[in-house]
Length: 148
Image (cartoon, rainbow, N blue to C red):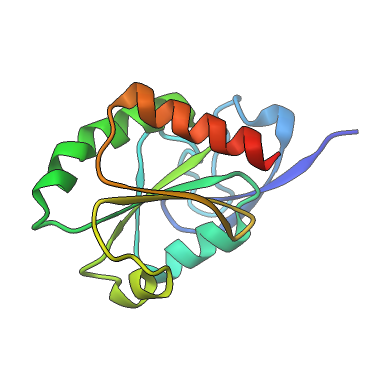
């Protein structure tokens, strides 16, 4: 029996139903027709962020950042590389805490950059500061394995 997943579009934030075995077939959004997996982090406003957390059936890795933050700028290329490696199994989101202060406050973000890994709306792990790509990938994989 095929497992149906709900996947939030990184472009229009609409919810798509997708067969698990079709995740690697370059699926497109039923609403905007853009690719559901682009190998890049999706920038999200507060509304799209909430939808990704609560409606995605795949894990969501969030980079809480701000444009004035020097470590955030240093970490941005690493996070982009991680998206290339982790999608389609994990959705990567960038949330600008300056534009979505309420969402950052609701998740008790005290320093940036902060990474938080979510699944089914529940936070699985959190890490403040920057990491290299290898350490980031291992951190995500270890936390997903522990949550399974």
